[in-house]
Length: 267
Image (tube, rainbow, N blue to C red; front, side, top):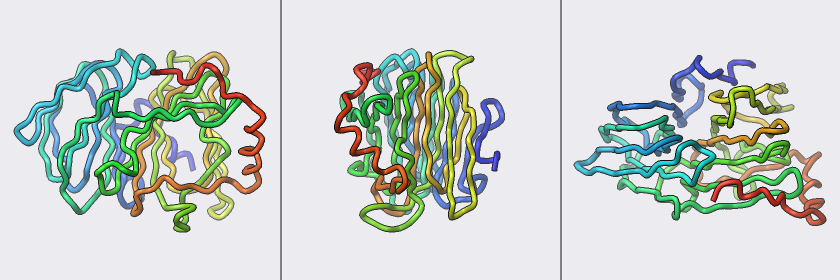
């Protein structure tokens, strides 16, 4: 199932057709470009430097961070059926989801982004909620995650591939990885007994993992902090997931552990 991992330099964007699912788009572009949202709502997330976006007769200036580890994110939500133009100093992630309703553009400033410290001990990580379930979007959800060197993230392994609301909802998801140095790496596991899948991959800067189903978890190699941007989409505005039942007990064990003092990594 190596087609679930797209290596840096070997992909440009992911569509529902290329991924084999219903809603989710993801891409990364830089410099100046023009595009249309088409049948998808999108969130533009600058990954480095500032960017200027023109759409709907308006101009938005999204402030910069030198790189993803250098500050909190800006983002711009644009509705479906919207032509737009971007002038960027660095890379911009384009997270999108097919939708039916056309909504209003929304600028997300760093102070609008909720920081959550999740886990404890060496499973502590930082979640930046950019497009939350409460956000005025139809299907799109976006978070970025900072995992300190040597820590586990998305742990215990969880899945969101069955409709058992409110405890679990079906979500398509991508993991887009960035690291502080080209030699840095992390380990990503994706497994599903129901689908006969068990993949463990070494992931590096610029790689993209598709998560159509199954339990998933990530570990950052010692010495290098890890960043990943998650785009998700489904029929329900929720991020509810189900832990691997064999590992759910770990949550109770965190009561006796302090959060990693390195987190939040970015403020």
